[in-house]
Image 1 (tube, rainbow, N blue to C red):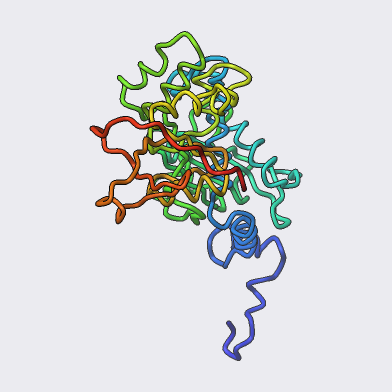
Image 2 (image 1 turned 45 degrees about the vertical axis):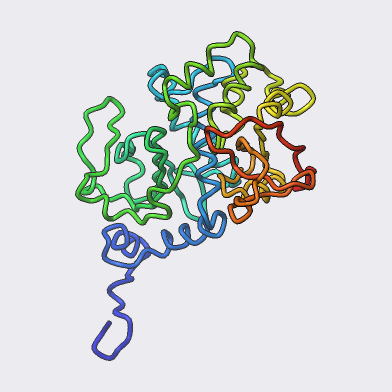
Length: 328
């Protein structure tokens, strides 16, 4: 401000000067703020970004064809392709317009998108200097992901030693990233995080149906996404392996095991039992028994006109009730 309280005109002699001072961190960054506002409006809880990252990792693993569930089993070329797939899938999810210079236009601002499986490993091309970057990170082993915005400044970058001269953000300057979501929960890769003995038992049968049955038998009270089922079944009609009429729901009902889906009535029943509630595209299995009189004060659900509670490991096996009607 000038002494008379008016804006100092020297701060805004030209648009180029203002842009340079914004890029240098000397002025507020209205473009970055506009991008942040737009992204938070599109995804207030970060669930859409988390789902895109989960689906992209699963897309690379291609479990239906390969049976893979571990990032380490990807080929080097597949890992290199991950960043491009994330950029494509994010754009498809949110419908961002193409940028003229960078990947997207968000709130009218040119934005480059960079993904890394290693936190801080974003490879920044020289042409992104001065622009806003959307930095995405996801780690399947930690089941965590983050997304932040950064106006790239050359002095904040490490010198590159690769052929295409891409640079990384210096660790000392990662504090400049404006985090939209930091260390958020990535939908878990159940197969990766299972007990190795249980995982081996799941993959042991030659039949896809038997493998799916074993999955829901051994991974109870855990959210199981469709891509996990697809990887275990390794069949195009994998959803048929979950449903009743001969699928896992039919087979495991004899063992007292219910498999809840993402229907509203199923979610309500899972919540009543105080177990993991399936989100969109997920299943949760649990073994139940009829509630004894002294168990009526425990979390329970009424099905088939009777009260049911989660079974203790040593509880006798009872045939499970019918699942509630399918309503979303």
